[in-house]
Length: 250
Image 1 (cartoon, rainbow, N blue to C red):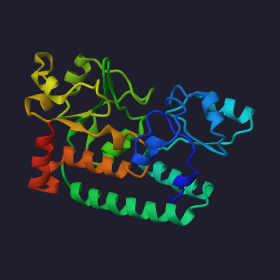
Image 2 (image 1 turned 135 degrees about the vertical axis):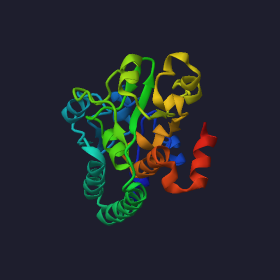
Image 3 (image 1 turned 180 degrees about the horizontal axis):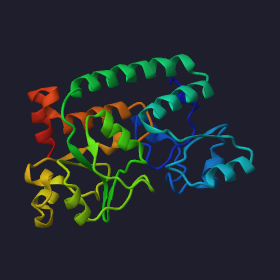
Image 4 (image 1 turned 60 degrees about the vertical axis):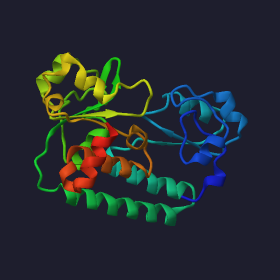
């Protein structure tokens, strides 16, 4: 949005663009350090309802620091958050242009997967224990747009735990493994695990890594993550080169 020079502090996980790594750190997303936040003297703090502690807003407002918190409902909610943030940062034109570009890329993705059968998809965000994206998560909406059908039906929490027995019973045809953490299991480990051999996606070698870095963040690169999902779920919709690229990632 052209307001990089307004940024005075970031979390420990803010690593894009590269210039963000040089900004003062104020703790983790779930473990922010209030004292360090106040030391950088922000006039506005950006937060997410899903990724930050619930009491963060209260702590900051009590000491006179305004907070802009977003809770996007699906992919469209992310676009709405960008528009609202544009108004808050006096960057409406830049926000509108960004949303138009994201809309165009989303439309291209929708056209590519339109009319294709929707395979059953399991999206894993954590491997010890197994945690998947459920219908209450915004990732569920991304899977829908990308042409997949989420096999997880638990609606009480966005990211429920799933047992291997549940995975086998739901018979996903595609298993997507977020590659956002070094501790996350590799797809090749799942494929070689004898306990997973009852899963259709494993038998057909469709356990695919996807970049959680772009998929899990409420920002403009989420549309890049959306395209990664669509290419993983429907590699044939994007041509032979993309299918080969997906195989190389493994």
